[in-house]
Length: 284
Length: 246
Ligand SMILES: Nc1ncnc2c1ncn2[C@@H]1O[C@H](COP(=O)(O)OP(=O)(O)O)[C@@H](O)[C@H]1O
Ligand SMILES: [Mg+2]
Image (cartoon, rainbow over all chains, first blue to last red; front, side, top):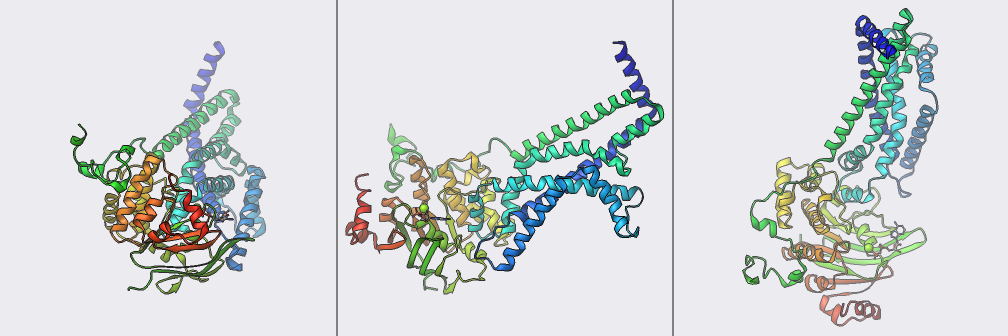
């Protein structure tokens, strides 16, 4: 019990002294995680769509070749970025660019670090999302695609109006996962000097050695961010599902009954509306 | 324009080695209500899908107002917007309300203004008795209601001909009537229709031409009275006998 009180007061002291630093870390973590998740989703959607453009044997050879090539490239991208540590990718890209351009092009200064971090986390998220989006697209029954084609919609219109909104809804849980993973895993960007929440912990304890109290603050901070994210995502999913009920738009009583012959005792539609509009008087 | 709307000429379709349609020929004129009957697997759906270019015919022509739309290099989207299709499984857009289902094609394909599209959709939704349900989503509707919305969605494109592929086969028996009523009403208004169906009463009473398909060919065709009362082909007789007394 004493220890807990001790911890509480240590955390309070740390917070009083360093709260602007912690809060800056929180801010940067959130901006990077949210922006990278959004960009990553866009990349994922682009790849998912490119990957599911249909082609048949009747299509001209160049089109088939181009689509095959696109699929191979997307596949390679996914495998490379899913198959290597993000921390290593950050180092690879951050130092790779000046290496190849003899320092002419580099990620310079704070803004350079931001660009590099955003790039790495986004393409990482994109690699994971590409597969989710592909799954989300192929899970929509092909009947809806045919329904859209049958009224003359082209592939892009079908995708944007019919398939992708449903795919998006289906993969909301994965988007949520990615956001939460990004909130946590952007911490590896300290390797290229990005100042996020965990980097601030390292900076602060480097001076005062209060490892455990600071780690406790970090634990609480990360949990607060991730729990809030999960809550907001659940809420968004609910909103996307729309109302469980709908309002009948009833202009007059006749519109409602017109065409609704769901009563077997009225016989087939071919023996007509006989009892429909007698107000039920015929029955008693 | 009194010529035929659609002419199917020497149309054949194979899936790999499986020849599903062989040398199909027929013509659809304005105001025709043609029903296509025949045993399951005889190629009726494939024929409709070839006409709508959802499948590419292996050979032969689909001629729409004199142009072969099945030719290589023809963009099918404009043609498809003039030829409506109603599916057995409705194929409504699940992410949209009833009203949006009926306006999205008008807006995106025909580039109509939102209000014009809405008014046009409302007119057809009223015609099929679904106007009160414009805010509902497909999952909240019964099968018969979904199919009536699907019909309104096709009509809202103001097509010249409507194709129906067994529109009542996926429905519970008590809902078949409401859909057939809507279709009968359409026929009475002069809509040109091509209907694959197992509803023999509809074929006999509403259509003016009946095509009997078997094994990928048109085995017999003619006026309903002739085909139902005096079938010439033994296969037609055998097929129709299954519906007697049912
Ligand atoms: N996409 C396809 N690939 C291969 N075979 C198919 C395909 N679509 C239909 N078929 C075959 O074509 C034949 C006719 O099918 P269909 O046109 O659906 O008949 P119907 O509508 O008269 O019941 C069937 O033998 C079916 O197996
Ligand atoms: Mg069929």
